[in-house]
Length: 145
Image 1 (cartoon, rainbow, N blue to C red):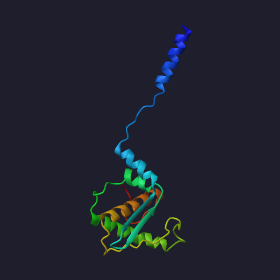
Image 2: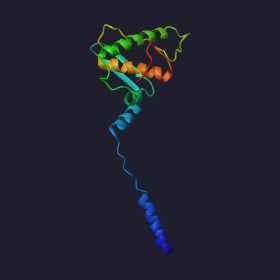
Image 3: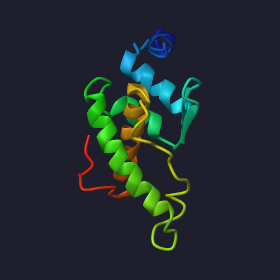
Image 4: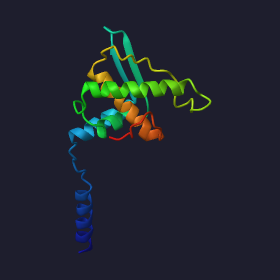
């Protein structure tokens, strides 16, 4: 009788040790891919520009919390980016007043150049991410998603 009980316990234990298969949703897969790389590079050889954003967590935030591409018009993004870039560049030039580890380099963003939707979308979302993460305010607008 004892052997039978031990055999049943071992059988139940072995049966319960099987790993369960989990399904991964597309959003979870996108989040996992975004976590692998914290560098966003946007380049256009035709206009000879390149934007490199190296910010831990930005890719994950962009995929998980930012509004999807197409939510904002390109004109809206360009207008906001222009305002944010002006304030950003002013802060870069005042390291005694603003944290130089936050504002390291100026951004050369010119309003007469059509950078395309993708560049404006990612730059705008970086400014929103930056403001929310570091509790900064780069203009008259309250940063929100």
